[in-house]
Image (cartoon, rainbow over all chains, first blue to last red; front, side):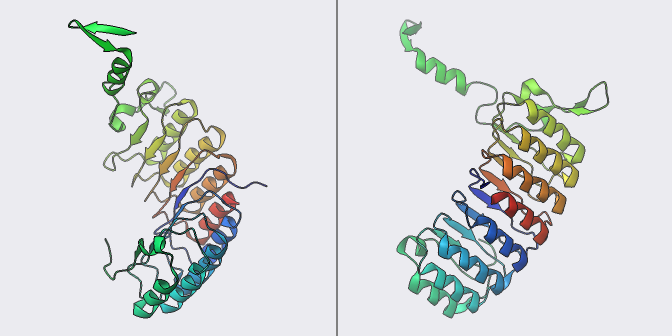
Amino acid sequence: MKVNRGLQKLDLSFNDITEVGIASLVAGLRNNVNLKMLALDTNNFGDKGVEILATLLRENDVIETLTLYNNDIGPAGAASLASALAVNRGLKELVLYHNHIGDEGALSIAKVGTAALLDGVHCSRAPFP
Amino acid sequence: MAFRIDGRRVPIIILLCLSYLLQPSAGRFCTDETANMRRNSDGELVMDHAALMMCPQIKWPMSKNLGPEGAKALANELKINTRTNWIWLYNNAVEQEGAEAIALTLKDYDHTLRVISLYGNDIRVRGAKAFGEMLKHNHRMRELFLGANSIGDEGATALADGLF
């Protein structure tokens, strides 16, 4: 086994990553127990990429911060996140602003998130904080 | 044990703290001025090793463009540097070659560096691949910031391979 044992934060924002890159990242992180923060802001993976990320969140309780702003995520992406968050117990901060998840998507997450997570969900419409 | 200053007893631990706080680099980032890059007799860019050994943190200003050649000098410095733990190279045109040199050093020599940012340095797929390879061997690196580098899916895949 060659699992990286050190890395805790990885920031790959603004890198034109699509769902293909997300799939590799999810595969790479499947056995990782150290990474606490993953930043993927302003990439290009949309709902499909989020659906793949959601499969990781179902299994991984180590990641505490996931930032996904400006990724063209709609209500469908929010719904897949919500279904993963129903079983995830690790995530404490989720950044979703400058997407278009709408009220429906926000509600679906609000229904399932733990109290600890909901304190750290950022999904306003403002493009930048 | 204590020393006397002005007739008062001063515990040695206080003196040690003071000497730490008053050292030239305390609480400040070292910059290009500390590194004082120049060419050696072989025409290679080198950094001031003695000065950088006083530096836990290096922040290179974007106005003093480090560039690929400077990044190679930094990579060489990191081979022997046992002090620096944090490097910030935001927007410094390090490019593929420079990123590769830094990643290669970090792969083979992981003395103290824990955090590195190469935001906006056009390191592309080649740079990302070098960092992915680095992650397979370096288990001390804690934080890696590689945003805005056009690494794309191929680069993300290479980094993911390193995280396996």
